Length: 444
Image (cartoon, rainbow, N blue to C red; front, side):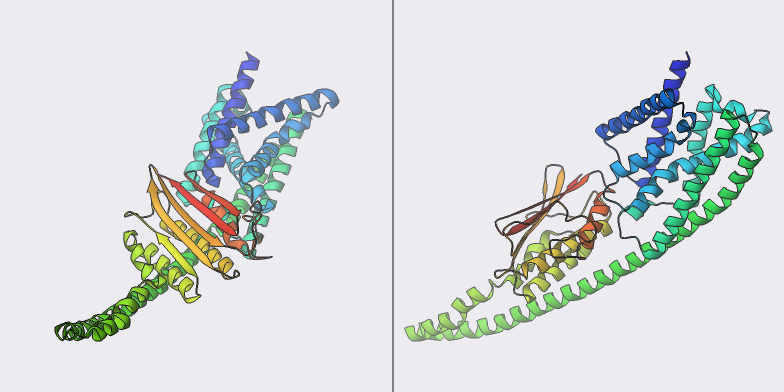
């Protein structure tokens, strides 16, 4: 019976822990990853039991959960900084621990339920579930969302706040678990100390979290402002480009009308020299003129989103101004789906910027882009020429690692951070025969 209860307790703890971890980090787990989480927890339990049996280290069980969570964060959230590994690993269990101990110390005694009984049997399961619900309600009430930390570069100020928060969580867990160990293993009454520690850390912890959340909200507003300015600039460039094309077409129409009149005179007079002259001066020349890459902007007509269309038009214009041969294919009407528009535009902008920069280093700069729907997927492909025959793509998504040199890989690092927030999105990279290709897929 005790074995069955222990198994149920472990299973419930694993389920609730994984659920909170996924909710707070924004990392949606596959069935295989859930299986890995369960195997990791069971493996650590067996390891700790074996260690306790061999050398009688009873205090090890008090550190099982934080070690498990840190291992989980490291395995599932790579590549992120160690600071974020500690934050995402400890934040769910520290917040739940604060809630569960608050219930045990201050709420249940109001109903004549001794806090010691909340550590075992039905009450233990009840507290686990109720404290998890309290965490979710707390996050929803305070409107805290820390998923964005994984999708962008952490500023020095944010990093300091994170490090302070991590320090608070580590010190809380160390002190609380030591006091708990003294209470249950050494029979030293530490209830009053734990209650005081709980209240003190609620104040410190919520203050640190509120400060971090405020910084994130400000960063998000700044990011949105930058995106709006970028979109406005792209719209202006797009309208100028269209205006320039319209002037050229109007000029051509005027010349074309005059040439038709001249051509008619040549035909009426049966003067073949006039006919040849008109053909050489306008028809043959215009055929070449309108094949210029700048007229490829009509390929964007099927992009059914003004912000994305203006961005692509601006990147096309930038590439043409740099004498890059550009090919664009958007065969059917399409608009971004399956993710936030700002995230889609961020990814596309980074991929285009990298393609332009890399192709300019070659003798024959080329970029080819296609955007289409295939079955239940949207696929965005961009390919550019490279000066190397093949580029090592294994590390390009790491921070400040780039195929273009040191300290120039932050863009793709941020792309990886955005993609990690969406379980339905993937990006594949290949490089061969002096060509670099990135395929961005969204499962709808």
